[in-house]
Length: 393
Image 1 (cartoon, rainbow, N blue to C red):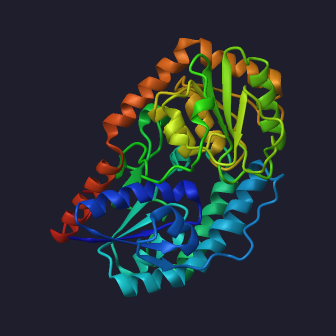
Image 2 (cartoon, helix red, strand yellow; image 1 turned 120 degrees about the horizontal axis):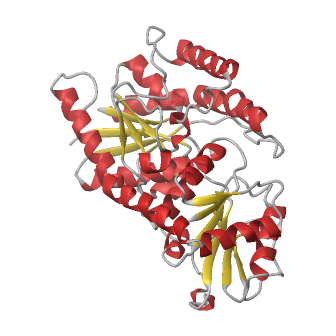
Image 3 (cartoon, rainbow, N blue to C red; image 1 turned 135 degrees about the vertical axis):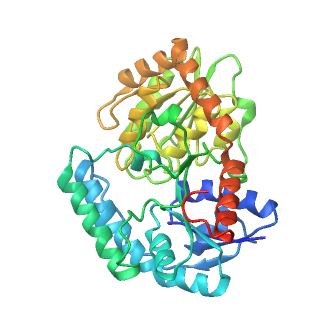
């Protein structure tokens, strides 16, 4: 029996895969604890989870208009850096109380990796997005240099200044929740293990009007994730209009937490505050989304092709991976109207090549092993530590 401390940021898409791996480890008899934002962790990891609270910056609101380099600057300067500084004391308290054999640190919870190296605790990286493997900043050397400067500053405050590796990548084990069938050729370090999506066993929201789904029409899911509800009104409205123009053979389920479509839903458009996404994907013919890594991975794990409209952060990188793999069509979030959205929908619904490519990615995901494979790699890592063998398992 070993002890694993998961350190996660206050981001649903980063916590859910870790929850699946933690459940697998617990089922094998290991002890698991969490360091992060208590309320969110209680909701996602369950009320019985061992949670060690960490502080987060008080104001993490991002101006909705930020895009491109401005959004990247906010991500690092105003979110990831302050988040690491705020979480670090809580992570250290969690270590003192739980005595982990291994810290499993999310790439965006830098306090986990830096605290681990300062205290000499073995650390594995949880990479819930493949964007860091894409060399997306290769054409922006000044931005990349600026990020490395921020990381060096955080290391000087929270970590071991004598270490030289990038703290986003454990030198021993990186768990990537994707496969090269989606990422293509990438710059992942040698210690990376591609395990595919790890689906947590979260309860699906209820109720849902299953009786209103028409088996004679294509079911299309539309979702912009949990972090884009303040900027998606126009896009959701245009998606609904595109579906209504195809109502004879298409029906949409739209995640509409902000109630944009309240009072306008009909037989062609089912608007819900929250959707049982995993269950609906078993019936879906296509997904329209923001190219968030979790939604893309969950869709492709079911062999469902996508229409991707990236907004910011890692989403343009993930969208490029989808289109390069042939599993979907990319459109512009800010400019696509019902005609562009409809044309993309027609493409993924009628051209069999998109579904065939999605199924190829699906097979690679299934072969990778998901949460079970991630748990096995962590067990092998701890075994190598006990034997005094440095490096990857």
